[in-house]
Image (cartoon, rainbow, N blue to C red; front, side, top):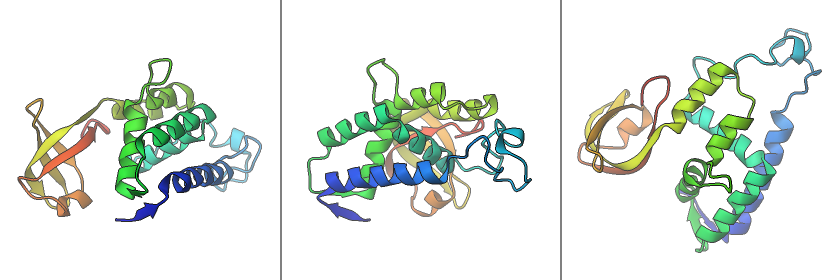
Length: 195
């Protein structure tokens, strides 16, 4: 667990650098050579194709959405306001920062009543296939769960303690960190018809 001292200025500088790095490295001009290596222009080759391949991991897709959201000046400003409001200590862990970003993306209401994630869905120019995949993330459950069973390397059976509903969550790394009886306060998202 990494701790940061004087975190608000640090987080804002990381945010600025991440956005600059993202906008420089991941933006491809329509007339640029296609990154697939075909030798054709991007607009005549892969532009407009689905951005999500079948091997994409949910965490990678959510990272892309978070980067896109924080690249938007209006949303970046809104996130900075949330940080200033909720970060009062001089020390914030990476986990705490991740939780703040997660809550901002999925739960924070913008002035139009929409969440930043809904803004992403409406404005990111996703193909219909990508939109369908990302739409599943919007239908998520944030709750308190008890770990019922752990299947190492495959998944975790959870009981929602508030709504009394069971979920089987496909997860590899997490299966080595939890045991039956653990209580988790987390978000469970739908991905390609499974949690």
